[in-house]
Image (tube, rainbow, N blue to C red; front, side, top):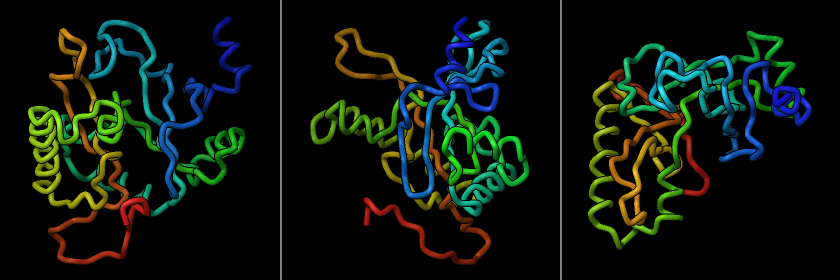
Length: 219
C-alpha cells in the first residue's frame, strides 16, 4: 500500500501532505520551505498547477516560519489586499501553531518545533536564483534578460499599486511558475513569474516607518 509507505517513511504531515524526500528546498534564519503533495486538494476543479479534470494531489510548497510577527504580517496583508494571482504567488491556506494545538504537536513530531507557523502556497517551477545558477543567462542571453526584467517589473509595480513595498526583493523571492522548452531544448520560454515572501513588506500609503529587516547574504 503506497499510503502505508508514506507513513512508514515519516513523510506524512498533518494527515494530508506527503512531504518530498528532499529535506528542504530553501532555508533561512526565519523559515524553511519544503515541497509536498497535498492529498486533500486534488485538481478536480482545475488549478494553475497540474492537469485540470484529474484527481492527482496538488504539488504545494510548505513554508514553515519561525517568527510570529512575520507570519502574522504576511497573512494579514494577503487577507486585506486583493493581489493578482498572476503577479503574486497564491496562498492556499495557513496553519497557526498558536491557534491549533494538533498542528503544534505535528510540527514537533517532525522536528520542526522552532517553526510553529506554516503558509501553504502553490509550488513554483524554480526561483530566479536557480535560473541564474543553472541556465547561464547572465551577460549572455539579452533577449531573455529583457523578458525576465519586463515581467518582474510588472509584478513589482502591481505590489506598489496595491500600496505596498515588498521589502525583500531578491532572486529567491522571484518564482518562475511555468515555462516551455524551446525545440532545441536550450531554454524556457512562455513563462510566468510571481513574487513571494511578504514578511518584510510595508505599506507606503500609511506614512509610517518600520524597523530594519535584511537578508544577511545581501548585506
